[in-house]
Length: 495
Image (cartoon, rainbow, N blue to C red; front, side, top):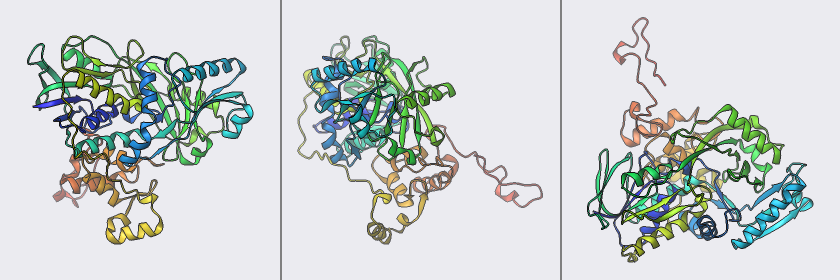
C-alpha cells in the first residue's frame, strides 16, 4: 500500500518523487522503460530557460520563473554540473527587432531578472561568430546549460536514498478505482499490482492514455518531434551563450548552444506526428536544422556532427502545462503536457504537485532525516594528475581507460553499475559515464563496457542489452565451442 504512485520516470516524475521523499510518505515510481530519463528527458535542448518566452499569467511562465533560480542550490546538492551561460534571441533583420522588444516586455511582465537589449556592437562582443546579418539581440543572463539525463538520474538516486521505490520495465496496463469518490487505486502492470491512495500522472507523451485508463479527464497530447545534431568538441567554442532565433508559433525555433560537456548542439525543428514512439531522424529534418542554425551561426562545420537524435515533446491542447487534480477521479493528479520549458520548471512543478496533493487530503509530515545531498560522481578526466595518481593507487581499475574519446575508466563504469539505481545496460552506462558519447560513438569501447556489465551483473554476454527489454547486442557464437578448429568451422560472434 503506497501513499503515492508516480507514473513516469522522466525529469518531472523524478523531481516529484524527490520532493515527496522529504515527507513521511510511502512513494514509488513506475516506469515502462529499463531506466529513468528514457523519454523526453534524454532528448531535449538541455537549456535552463530564463522565462521571457511564455505568455504572462500562464503556468509555463510562473513555473519557469520559479524553477530557474532553484537550480543553483539543486545542482550543488545533487553534484550535477550546471553553468549559467546566459542566452540571446537574435534579430536577423530590422523587422525582427520589434519581436525582441515584445519579448523583452513579456519578460518584464513575467518578472524575469537580468534582461537587456543589445545593439549590434554589444552583440558581436558577446558572440564574435554570430552571423553578419544579426542586428540586435535580447540577452537573458539567468539562462544556463545542463545535462538533462544527469539531472534526472541524480534526482532519482536522491529520491531512492530517501526511501522512494522504483519499478522499471513496468508499463501501466490498467488502473482501478477501488473506492469511487475516495482516493484508493489499484495500478497494474505486466508483473506488478500496486495499491495506492494517490496517483501522480507524469507519463510524458502517454499521460493522456494514463488519464483514460484511470477514468479521468479526457485530453490529447500531440507528440511533436524535434531533431538535433551534436557536433564535436572542437566546435563547442563557437558559441558562448545559448543562441535562439525569434520564436514562431511552433516553438522557440532552431538554437545553437554549447553543451555542459563542451560540444556544440544545434536544433530542434518541430513537426507534429502521430506515432508516440517515433524518435527517428530524417535526412530532410537534419538538413532543415543545419540550414536553420547556419542563419545565426554560419561558421560551424556540419561535417563535424558526431551523432544526431530526435526527441518527442508532449504538446497540450491549450499550449499550457496541465498540472491539476482530475475533475472526475479523486486522488488522480496530473503533471501532463510538460513541453518546453519543462526541464527548467521541473523543481517548481514538483512543489506545485505536492501542494495539490496536500490540498486533496494527503498529509505531508516533513522527515527529520531527509538528506538533500547526493554523493558526487568521480569523473576521472576532471581530476588533476596528482588526484588521478592517488585514485589509481587506491583502486587500479581507475587506471584502465575504457572509453578513450571521453577518457572514461573501468572504475567509473563499475561505480555507475553499483550506484543506487545503477546502470543495467549499455545506454545506462553511457548516460552515467559518457562512455560511448565521443567521436566514435561507442565503436571501440562498447565491447569492453559489455564485458564489465556482464561481469558485474553476473550475466552471460548474450544477455547484455543496449537499452533493456529485448535489445540484445550479441546473438552468440555461430558454432559450438567444441566444433572450433574443425575444417570450415567458425566461432565468430554476431553483432
